[in-house]
Length: 379
Image (cartoon, rainbow, N blue to C red; front, side):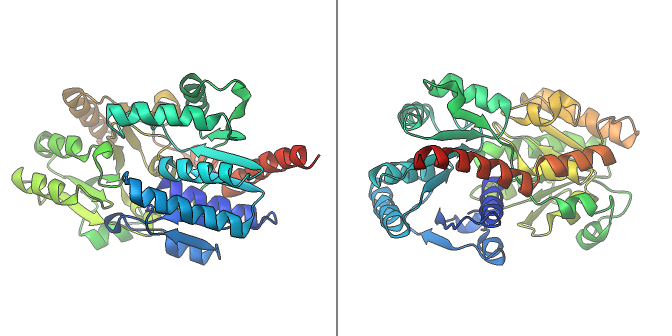
């Protein structure tokens, strides 16, 4: 339940399914204190949330076994018709516990391209082997994009390819869609003038997000564009290291660490450009929120980014190679300043994004999937 796309998706899905008459509980592991959490969001939506303190992101045989026992206990008490798991650790422990408890239907959602850049090579091979085994007893495997579905079919090799279905993210984008561009409230609170060009990255401060690439590029970009500022929104394990990098490069006046911000729609409204420089991605929520906000986007062409940006039609794609990344980003900034950036989301795009990734659409699609399979079970 750390601040991020999967947590928002799961809270919205649980809330949406409750509106269809489903009785649900949401079970989560312990969050990293640096990354923040969405407990308050779950509480606002009256979602019953159970936290398992010993279930953490890192691998720990003893803690993972204790978490497994606690999940077993919750399942035996609640007696669910369906278990739906999300993310790697919870997906493995939750589905294994469901098998032990003979839960009628088991679903799992992949939130991204997890098989490279997230783990070392040995762990990635192990995870692929485990996921292939688990896919054999999972009722339906859900991915967020068609390309990810195809990748999963290639990697997991299910006997029935139709076991893998595509259902997009569900997000509450009303505030993003309704917020006018350049509201200036957030810019003013940060001390920026209307003449400053503000680039932002909104992401957890973890290795896969690759913030150091963007920070290094700022050494050149700051010279080319005297009015350029970079804001880093988010928190995580790399913060101290990244702050030291900024200090050593002498960029403290041009790069600003903002921590976790709740009302992100105000940030998107006032950014001149959202940048993402990840080594790998699934379906980045920050890009979806930026597009719904009318904020221009430039992001490295990795994982599901190219598909999300429709191969560059909705935003600029950046190379992951450092020199090319620098030049691609420099050109994007230059084109924006000269009004030659043709990928700025217009009103039609903003409406399309907010409708396509709506919570109601997600809940309807998932509920339909559940209902069809439960009818098969009951007959």
